[in-house]
Image (cartoon, rainbow, N blue to C red; front, side, top):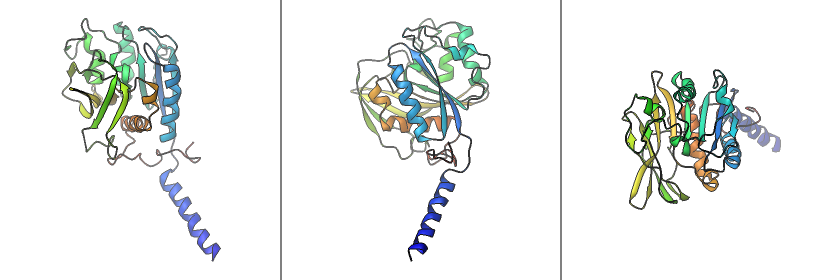
Length: 275
């Protein structure tokens, strides 16, 4: 009797493992961090571990210990710097890098089709416009980074809790996720919103409400780009709800998320079979 029960049970386990995680080559992501105003030395490890724990992915880190607003990154120095990566996660804070050649070099892989994910201060990077506090015309030298993001932001107010509301019920990035409230965090403003983006989440602090997560199809290749302005403090970055959300964004950008918000076969929570 025991043997007859055990065999079907084992068969069920192996069947689940096969269905949940068939052989699949792990996604490769490049996570870029450093620059002003954040504890990137800690957050790089939080993000790598949190994302790798949730999906079949290998996250490589390009980190700069420079804490200024002109931080540079060794990974950008290489020709075809994003070659071999399925998705690039920008989490740097280099607001005063204004050299058009540098910005165009960073954007080149995304124009060619490499998906992008942008976290928090990445929205305030590479500000080549003379006045980022006013809307910048799309397609100009001042809008290079904003065209990639699909939204222009220039700053934030005091740190206060943010009420996070997922606004697109059909989005696979948020399907099944519950609205939540952060600890004291930074609510980024929306100076200009490009018409082609899809809003994913809004954030509210008192009477102020802005778009805090969205998707964009960038350039001629319609490159998938996911962005969220959440993620200043370590407590937020390490929050399960934040990491679940960001991982969904990474999978969507890499086109490995089904319409119900589940990873495609082989890209779910990693097991010994996938790693």
